[in-house]
Length: 298
Image (cartoon, rainbow, N blue to C red; front, side, top):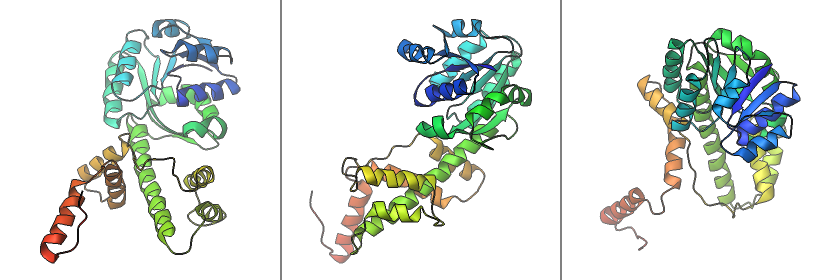
């Protein structure tokens, strides 16, 4: 099939390569002309602008947007909406908020355009192992681009979940669960490191990956990290968050669904960014005031 990819970063670029391996025709565009030229050299058809990209597509056109969520995604979709024709398909494969996807679908529908929100997981490894994709939006559009989705995904790695927003809601919860899993591993390895047994944490991760009930791809990646840097001395203890964890907790509050583990993992990331936590200083002051416990002066 023919499909366009807009945004050729770590995810978009490798998705193009996987589509090319599946013998699909891919038209590509990125603000970085060098990124476009690189993929043209690998078999893609390049475009110099969104207008040029749309002109190179056959109806019904399918354009996959893989740019940062928020304003960049909105601006790209707005421009596409002014260039595409009735029946064409806009796909948002980024980490957009599901409410934005619901709104965008309704706005595009008024113009006769079809919309798919595709929650995409796989990161830098997707080129080789495939991308897990959670899909919502127009069912006919899904069926039209299904050959490309099947190429991008590993076996049974993509599914249609219903109306617009369903794909990005599933990806939001997926990332919330990911936060909790990562935090659990982190706490466990910190406890082992603090013990008197002098564990080789790389060896622990390797053993756990051999049939243990806690084995996972994340644990395999943890093993890789310990192989590269056993003490993780090259890293600063600062962990960012890209939004999905916050959205998951917000939706849990809205639906009165308890997600204490996911919430705690999100707050742990906030703590990692504090050089000298005021809350921890308050705790130290209180212990000193009520019990005369020793404190450390700044």
